[in-house]
Length: 165
Length: 103
Image 1: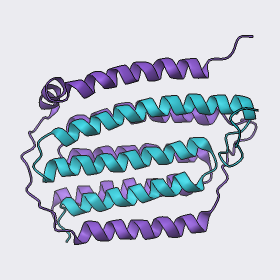
Image 2 (image 1 turned 90 degrees about the vertical axis):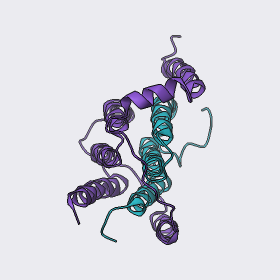
Image 3 (image 1 turned 135 degrees about the horizontal axis):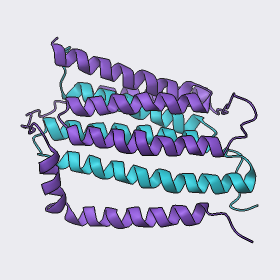
């Protein structure tokens, strides 16, 4: 058990524990803040897998963008008359049993499968290579995503706009 | 078994996926359902990047993970706009009480 393994277990524990709190705590604002730790833990796992650019993108986009957006959503859709912003839950027990069985099945498959593991040589910094790939092999998807983001921006603005009557 | 390999990352991803599904099916608040979806997308991304490292596929998996992050951002923006509209119309965002498209 070397240093890499210890770091992995720390990040995995942070990710999974905070994700567990996200789906079990009843206060929505607490959920949003636990989600912050989940995103940071996942970013740490990306770093351990040699994906430095993706990890930074994860922190910038998820923590800086999506999480703030979700917090805005919480604040704008609840009457902030008291501090407690609670959310109801439905079907707790059947859902726990079903997802537990599902998780057990998937984990069993993951453990028992003989993965053909031949670690590729990930370069020390991946930013330059990802940039090359984006503008050569994946250029069509890249362009389409640009159009998609523009459409999503215009669509979100026009849906959320107040009707001036 | 203690030595970290591909299987460990896949197990973390599977547990994260199950927690996300649990959040999606048990929560009433639409914003909480969105948080569950983000967890599911993150677990898929972990799989992509793990196979990119251990499967000798080059950097393709990392590029796809980047695309997933961008799609998640677009999805969150649109979904929150819809949630705000639902709140304006129905004054709550509980997905089990909203069964009409308009008032």
